[in-house]
Length: 407
Ligand code: JHZ
Image (tube, rainbow, N blue to C red):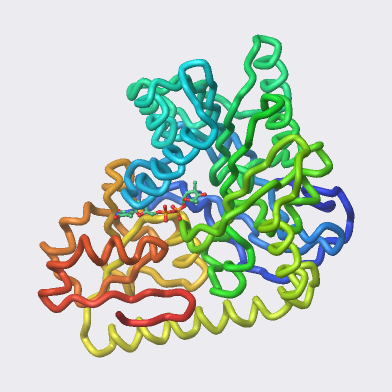
C-alpha cells in the first residue's frame, strides 16, 4: 500500500473532504508490453482542502515508480504543444531581454522541447528531469540536462555552485511533485532576485466545468486554482504577479511568479472571479461525482449503440488521460479495436488496464474504423486536421468531454 495523504499537500491542514472516487486504476503512463501481464492498481480519490482550497488526490504513488526509465511521454510528439511553447519563449526572450549571460532553468524539461528554443537563440539553459529516456533525448538535442528530480537539496547544491536563474519554466510539473512545498522552496532558492518563474498548470475550474475527469490520474497529485496557488506561493515568499488563461491541455493557467512585487490587476480579478464562482467552497465540487457518472453512462451508451448497429470504433491518442477514461468507464476491447498515437515509444504496446493495442496513426487509414474516439480531445482540432483524409472517406470523430458528441 502507498501512503494516502491525511493532511493537505500544501497547507498541511487536516480539513480534506473527498468529492470524487474513480475507483482503483492502473498507472496511466505505464503502458503494457505483454497483453497478459497483470498490473497493480491504486485508489483514485479526489479531495478538497477547506482550509486552502487545494484540490488533490489522496494516494501518493512513489515518484520513482511513476517516472521510470520507460516513461513514455515525450512532449515533442505534439506539434500544438511545440507551437505553444515556442511562442511563449519568443515573448520571454524579448520581454526579459535574455541573452548569452542569462540562464533559463526548467524542471521536468522532458525531451528538451521547450529549452531547445533558448539553445537555438544562444541562451544558456539547464534542464532537470527524472525520466531517463526523455532526458537523454534532450541531451542528444544539445539541451544541458540533469537526469534527476528537482528537490530542495538539489536546489541548494546548485545554488552553492552559483546557479541563479533569470527565468524558470515549470510547465505541467507542479501537480506531479509529491513534496509540493519542497518543490516551491527549490524554485525560490534557484530564482535570481529579479528573475521570474513561468508556471503552467491545468486549471481546476475548467476541469470541473468541462467534466475533464480523465485528467485525474496518479501522476497528477494536485489540481490548482489561483486561490490555492497564491496561498502556496505566499508561504514561500513568492508572489503571482501576472497570469493568463491559455487553452492548452483543456484550459490552463500561465502564471508569472516573482520574489515579492505587485500582484497585478489580472491576478486580483482572477481571485475575485474565483471567489464569485465559489472555488473556495466545497459546494463548487460537490456534484462532480454525479457529472462524471453521467458522462460515463452517456459515453458507454453511445459506443454500445454504435457497436450494436455494426459500426467499428477505434481511438486516437494513447494519452494518460485516455487511460483514466477507459479504465473508469470500463471501455475495452469489446468496444474499441485499437488506439493510434504518433509517439513511437507508445506504438506496439497496450493501453494500461484495458490492454488495447497501440499502433501508429497510419493504422486509421489502413483499417478505416467508422468512428474514432478522441482520447487526446485536448488536441481535437489538430488531430482532425491531420486526419482529414479519414474524414473525407466518411470517418467520424467522437469527442468525449464535456459531454460525448459525434463531430
Ligand atoms: P496529451 C500528458 O498527459 C502527460 P496526456 C503528463 N502527465 C501531463 O501532465 C500532461 O500531458 C499535461 C499523441 N498525439 O499531451 C501524443 C498524437 O498522436 O494530451 C500523446 O501521446 N498526434 C506529463 O498523455 C497523446 O496524443 C497528435 O497530433 O494525457 C496526447 O497526450 C497529437 C497532438 C498528439 O497528454
